[in-house]
Length: 240
Image (tube, rainbow, N blue to C red; front, side):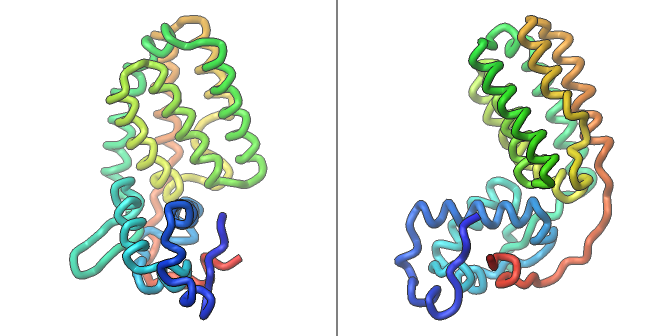
């Protein structure tokens, strides 16, 4: 994660720090802080405080927060500003219900289209996800798991549905970060490997059934615990 520029040096950078690469690094830093729960659900994200922490303009921070809002990581409220999204239990159920309908339905097409190169790339993602979990890197594991499911959806050859799955996976990442168990994503480590095997065999219907069980296991692992919201210490959260 890119370290923020702080204090007088940060203020001195001003708009000079408002480049696309810098914005991408800040977006990544805030996303990781949310997924790792260093920024709690409901926590307010003041534009002026973030601008000072990262050494960019408030306009730049506003654009980043708007992007995070589109990804459902942040909620923008008139007169209150931005805050970390607090997904409800009902929202979690709806997201996983949608994933059941779409992802399971895409498995027969994915099985028909998968190539040896596709399978190799998916195995690499599954391996990296498992390694991240073993190393205690929950944020990285959640992102890799989401990317795995996005790649599966892309194999089906329907760009519109693949984009929809990517949005659902983004929302699922926050739900897992908030309600999931550290070091565990709600499924066995071999689940993704088994999905790849079924797809390689051309067993689309069996892959759909396995995907359904896989998603149900993730949803069943969620534990709803309400956390009090408040103003986070942004300097501490984004310090080295």
